[in-house]
Image (cartoon, rainbow, N blue to C red; front, top):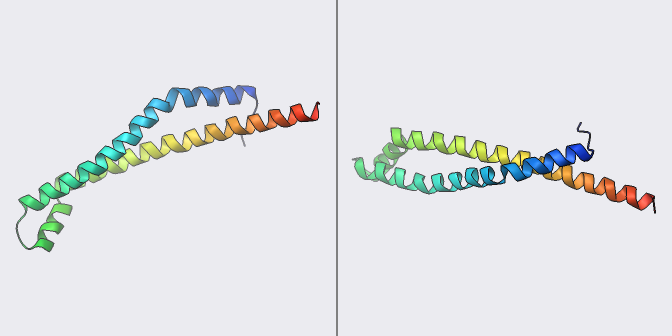
Amino acid sequence: MIKIDRDTMEEALNRLAETSEEAAIAKSLVEGLKQKGKTVKAMGFISADGTVAERDAKSLSSNEFQKWNNELENAVADSETYENKRKVDELIVRTYQTISANLRATNV
């Protein structure tokens, strides 16, 4: 369990400030890779021969497609990690604000 005091809240705020750009870059990388996947699949489809179903299967099993898929999985993991850590830090800040407000209300 996390002890939520002023120091913990300040650390959370600092982490949020320090990781905002990195989190945005990680998220945009995922979006870019999703678009790139369509191109990788299309290029594999065009270079394959056979029926449409065979060409589709070959494009999905190509080395380039597998490499792209691994890149996407890693990018999604990084992006989700940033997002989850930032959500925890946001919760810490909000909880601290609530605790502070409650303490002020009882001291009135």
